[in-house]
Length: 490
Image 1: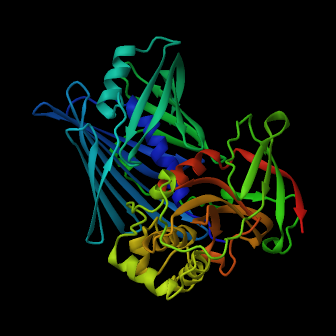
Image 2 (image 1 turned 30 degrees about the vertical axis):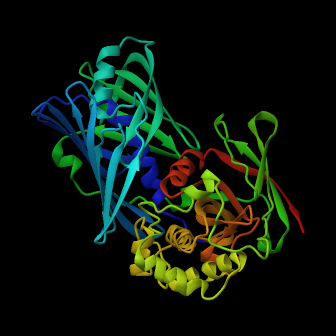
Image 3 (image 1 turned 135 degrees about the vertical axis):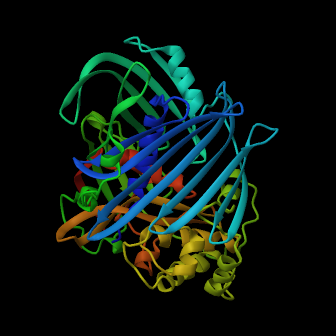
């Protein structure tokens, strides 16, 4: 079982989505903050706002180091929003770097009110058009909205925030609280409490910020996946100082109430999931699993993998919009790249049957990725094709890209997978990623990390998407439940 580091990245992007709007640095000001996870310093954030030529440029630079089972990785994201003085969007730039793998996306608002986005990675450029929802705002727009609404206790308002790092928007609800004494490294300061609830594809995530009269956030807290993330304003010297070593891998394990011996050979498994801290569980149903609401917020989840039908040809020739979408290249699933197309041809060979082709792709990716470890950042399919290195996310995005390259719709799934032993723990579920391919009207599970026949009833899906959406949804769900009961059907 491979646990993926990208969930932390997802949480942090959402974290800054909730934190960023309540920063009010004046023109030309730079502010520094330290980032903590469960009390250990893991990185810093630099916030810069400048005004020039009738444009407002807001930049958030985030950099941190996290350990995963003995492997340390460095993650950095620089996100810049360009807006008019009255908060209307003009463009953005996002530079993401994980363990030395860089990806840059530049967006410019076109005449139709959408963003034309160019993404560059490893010398390959990809162009796409991204919807910008009517009424959505970015950094300066949110700052102006908050100044308009004020800091009166009990004030409530909603906003649609476009997050360049996600290339999509999230709905946010803001509630202004009371003036409270806030601990800032032992110094007690009176600040106004502000809660921002963000509706993600997998559920709601809430951050709490403590702001001064100029809307500067001096402290922000977000609980996620059983951990506590904090950002605290501080001097530049401390923000940029050496980080602690914080290993989060054990935070992403759930204990099974009973051993699941040889679970991949079972017909189905039914799980009783119980919420933690009154969380409202949103577990998806699909052709491979059925989620039914039980008592007291519990969910009864039955995982019964479907098998591919024989005699189904490819490429897909239907007209279902959802399925056609699962054929398109994205910035992490570059199915139109020559390198991916060549791998696809090699993987499927002369096979004409789609069911056989996806199983060949599953096995091919398992053998193609030769360095299976946790040292890689969140690599795209094209990067994996070049490095032949990674863990479950790299297997998942490459499998999806190869499927799409040969005309078989595919998507990335994130969730949990059972392991007999992992990190010295027996009978645990850990965060995982795999792929689903659309064959003959059914979504077929593929797990290239465990090929052949990698996917089974020991997989619990929490979200699906092209690439990032599934990850963000998982970040909002993991840590909100425990597995109380398991029933196995042979």
